Amino acid sequence: MSGPSLLVLYGSQTGTAQDTAYRIGRQAQRRHLKVRVLPLDGYNVAELISESLVVFVCSTTGQGDPPDNMKNFWRFLFRKSLPVGSLSCLDCAVLGLGDSSYPKFNFVAKKLHKRLLQLGAGMLIPVGLGDDQHDLGPDAVIDPWLRSFWEKVLVLYPSVSNMEPLREDEPLPPSYTFQFLDEETDQTEVLLRINSEPTGPSEFCPFPARMLSNRRVTEPSHFQDVRLMEFDISGSNIEFAAGDIVRIRPQNSAEDVQLFCQLLRLDPDSRFTLRATDDVPVPARLPQPCSVRHLVERYLDIAAVPRRSFFELLSGFATNELEQDKLAEFSSAAGQDQLHSYCNRLRRTALEVLSDFPHTTAEIKVDHLLDLFPEIQPRSFSIASSLKVHPNRLQILVAVVLYRSKLFKPRRGLCSSWLASLDPEQGEVRVHLWVKKGSLRFPKELETPVILVGPGTGVAPFRSALQERVSEGKTANVLFFGCRSESKDFYFRSEWEDMMKAGNLRLFTAFSRDQEEKVYVQHRVQENTALLWELMTNKNACFYIAGNAKQMPAAVCDALKEALQQEGGVSAEEAEQMLAAMEKTGRLQSETWS
Image (cartoon, rainbow, N blue to C red; front, side):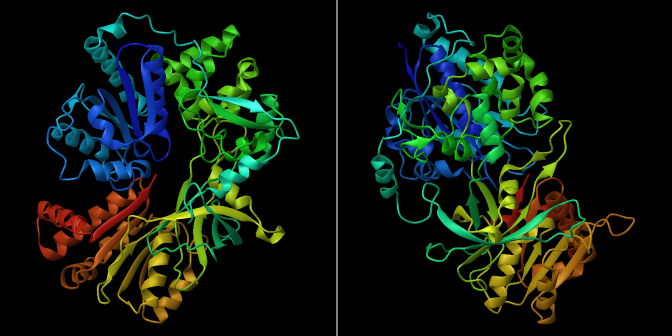
C-alpha cells in the first residue's frame, strides 16, 4: 500500500449509508490505498485534525435528524468552542443519502458540509445528494459522484494514479475468517462476552420481553392484517413517554434458514469462532463461539432485497460464463435499469438471487458471508400505550406487510411477518427489544389543547399520548382518525368512545371507502377550520401528524394552511410563515414513515 490513507466515516440508520461506505472502501482497496471504514460514533472525532483524506457518508432520519450512530460526533462537531481553522489540513467530501418525499431532504449532509467548511476543511467536490425516490435509487447520484471523487484524488495524489487498480471481478480478501470447532470445545468465551455486556436494555443488550398477546384488530375479511401486540417489561428498568419508539430486531424464518444452509452446503449446527483479517472488530452481537444457525437466523439479512454491492461481490465468485456475464452487468453502472427490473421492482430477496445463480452460489466461500450479507437491521415501532394506564406493559400496533409481485411467492415484511407468527398461547415467547426517545413531544401544561391527525397505524403514538394525557387530567384533546371502513379497520373504537363519553376527547373520523367519494383526514381538517383556528390562535394548541409519508402529511398541512387563510384572513404566504413558525417552536410536529 502506498499513497495517502483514506478514512470513510458513515452515519447510517437502515444500513444504506453503511453499504455505500464499504463500497467506497472496496474501491480504495482496488486502488491500493490503505483504508478504514468506521461508523462516526466508532471513531475518536478529536483525531480528525490529523487526518488528510476523509469521506463522510450520512443519511438523514425522521425530521432532519442525524442517524443514531453519529449523534455523539454531531454534538462534538457543532460545539461553539471549536476553532474556525481547526480542520484546515483536511481534504474531504460529503455524500448524503436521503428521500425527497420528506421535507428535510438530505438535511444532515448539507449541514455537515457547511460545518466542515466553517472549520476550514477543503472540499474536494460538491456535496452529493442521493435520492431514494429516483427511478434508479441513490446510485443515480452516487455513481457520478464517486467518479468525480476518484478523479480528484488521482490529481491530488499522483502516486495513486501510477498504480494499476485491481480488476472489478477480482475478489478482495474477506474481512473475517471462520474457524470451525469440534464438538468438545468448551463455551467459556461466550459466557465471558455475555457477562461483560453493559447494563440496561440497549441495541447490544436488548431486554427479552415476554409477549403476552398478539391480537388481530382488523375484521377477518379485511385485506390488511393489523395486530395489537402486548409485551411484559417487568424488571427491565425500561421507561418511556408518549411519542417514544421501541426497536425490535427480527429473525429469519426457519424455512429460509434451512434453504440458505442447503444452497451453501452448511451444517446449521456446526460452530465456529470469527477472526478478523485486518484490525476490524468482530461484530459485537455475535457470540463467540457461534453456531451457523444463529448466524443465519439472527444476523445475516438474507430475506432483504439485495443492493448492487451484493452482485458486485457475488460476481467475484462466478466461474460459470453465463452467470458471470449477468452478475457483471448487474454490478455495472450501465446495468442498473436491468438490476432494478430484476430485483427492486419485483422485491426479489438475496436468498432468491442465490437460487437463481446456483453455480456461483456453490463457489461462495464461508469466510465471505459477512462481507456479502448485511446485518439484519432493527425496526422501529411507535409505542401505542402509556405506562400510566398499563404499568409494566408495552404495546405496539403492527400492520403485517404481505403483498404480491410478479414472483410466485408473496412478498413478506421480515419483521411484521415474524412478529405475527409468534403465538404466546402455544408457549412462552420472548422478543428482544429496547426503547429510544421519539421525535414527538407533547405539552406539559394542563390547559394546552392537542390536535392529533393519525390515519391508519399512524394513530399508535396518539393512543399512547391520549392515555397519558387523560390520566394526567388533560382533557383538551382532538383526534382526526382515518381508515378504509368503519366496520373493518377502525382501531381502538371502543376506547375513543369511552374517552368521548367522559368528555376527554373530540373525535373526527374519515372512512375513505364507505361511500362513493373517497374521504380522507385532510377533508375532515378542512371541514373544521373554525374549531382549529379557535384552538390554535386563542388556546395555543399543538398540532401533530403521524402516518405514512406518501401524500397525507402534505395534504394535511395544505388543509391547515387553508384553515388559517379562511378563518384568519391571512394570505397564502403568511399562512406558510405561520406554519413554519409553529414548526420551529414545536407547535407543529410530525412523525412519518415510508
